[in-house]
Length: 196
Length: 178
Image (cartoon, rainbow over all chains, first blue to last red; front, side, top):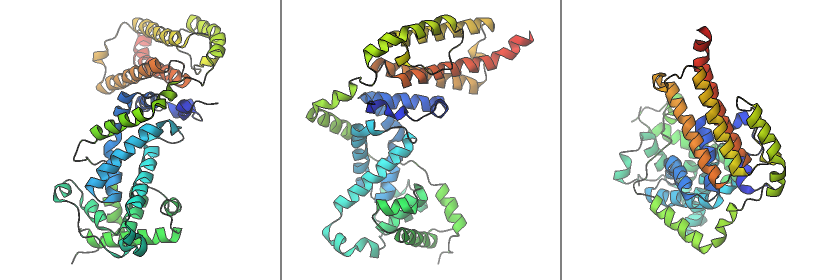
């Protein structure tokens, strides 16, 4: 039986593996982290936490929640890094792990009122982003944060993260048509809001 | 009232979105604490350190011949993947042998090229050599934790071969033209 910690190399040809010294070095770091080496894991954190935080922030539109979920992502990553099999790039796999953890967080923290009435679908958020946050954000990010939750999630997953509507519909438990409609809704609002 | 943003401009703005954002607080401290706590709660975490994927006895019975052939008859590094299962050496010895072989081959090559100074190379080439060297160091470190990992051995072999190929490309034409 294959050892889970080395499975990430399987199904890769040598040329796929060895495309650059950076990739090779990263694979070695991942291997060390899979062995339980915390220093190697910290190196992965240093390399990826800003990317993970950006996904969390855009999907959650809230600094504190984004920071909490970003931490949760790395805690879960430490426990599940042996699941990385190298079928895709590590960054792609980590993006997918992150998106799923964010969605899990949203499901867990939805209050009963929102569950019953789907309030987030009806309201356009006032800018709830704290002032200290906005200075570093692009104009588009500020407006993405104002989008209704479902439209924002679909927009971020489709337009920013590159998921297909079929994938998003499964992730968000909605029809493919609904995902497309939410995307167009988000796009229309953004085109209206973003100043030229 | 704002003019409506065109689809093209929206796509352009999207393409310019940064893929990184910096959190306002240090997140590592909390992650580190959580990891330590979970590790204490779950002492079996060390389980992944067990090396089970290559039966040691099987590997030990097969490696030596291939290793000896490889080290003795190959002036350049082999193109073929390193396979612990087909060689009969202890894993740590194999890593050491690979390192020694690489150093020797590189040294021989540099001598044949007239001991060129790396510091005189173009900056991009120097950077490439530094990247390769850094990758080698990282892989060697990983191999100290998991010396029987074939894939790491192959990665090490790849970086070594890349470095030798790069040096050959750089210096061979000059050497041949003398």
